[in-house]
Image 1 (tube, helix red, strand yellow):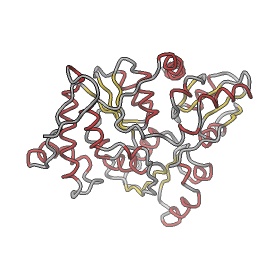
Image 2 (cartoon, rainbow, N blue to C red; image 1 turned 45 degrees about the vertical axis):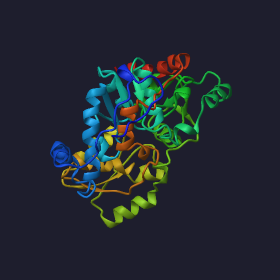
Image 3 (tube, rainbow, N blue to C red; image 1 turned 90 degrees about the horizontal axis):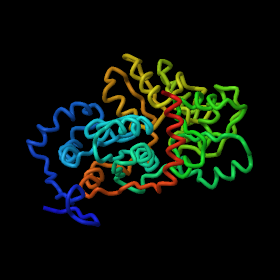
Amino acid sequence: MMTARVPGPDSGENRVLPMPDLTYTPEVAAETAHLYDRVKHVVPPVEWPFHAPYVAAINRLKKERDAVILAHNYQTPEIYNCVADVVGDSLQLAKLAARSTARIIVQGGVHFMAETSKLLNPDKMVLIPDLKAGCSLASSITGADIRRLREAYPGVPVVAYVNTSAEVKAEVDICCTSANAVQVVESLGVDRVLFVPDQYLAKYVASKTKVQIISWHGACEVHERFTGEELRRYREADPSIRIIAHPECPPDVIAEADFTGSTAGMIDYATSQKGGKVLLVTECSMADNVAASARDVEFVRPCNLCPHMKRITLPKILDSLLTLQHRVEIPEELAVRARRSVERMINLQN
């Protein structure tokens, strides 16, 4: 038996737990068969004997640790469908986790998401399985950048997409998601706002409101790689295809789409296309996860992977539960200010 190690005392609730046996046995196969049934359309049979021992071990360990696992829509199907307790976009995950009585939150997503979970669940232990799971969009702007923007545009309120660090959230007036961005902007009752950091989401919001939008130059490295020309080729090959895009995509992509909306809106639209063919213009694991449940829809996958999301794996989730690493901590003074901008958005929706 191997033993995982973690700094600090090995006792009580923070004790180190032994590494479980990860052999694919008939017992493990039987224990996980109902879970494989969820993903068999997107996970090949040859892969399941590798995944199944981790799935079984993680699901047992969650109970022992009193932990809940959050999985973003861009997590791989074996995580999203087989070990996650809560699934959704970044804000949905944090809000739903706050309703849980679990002592520990394991974030199946990138670092800013783990920070948001910690902001809304300050008394819980929040773990991220890989500290290098970052985000190109979140890293495109800093708290210092916000302060410089305020100097350049005195009195203009700042709206931050929730895909930002706690440092940025602490400097802005209110956060938003792709689903409520227009509502948030218009709720401020002003003629113009600074909108950070996604330039394409800012352009989309500007097309839906009379409020003047002053944007930042950030972008999601997954969504900005799509092009309108690429989508036209798909439609030329099959005119019946329905194209669904996220508003983080460039304008020429949105112009080619049949539907543009938030992650939740994309999922709802895709699953409504009974017997049709759908192209989801987003991270390709999301298409896998939707396809796992919408089996009567044919999904075409242009497949841009998020390298940061893919740092989260079943072995790393298991190790995180065994070692209680890596813990997400936010200095209290920063957390108070960052929490305020997130809660202002949440209260707007309620």
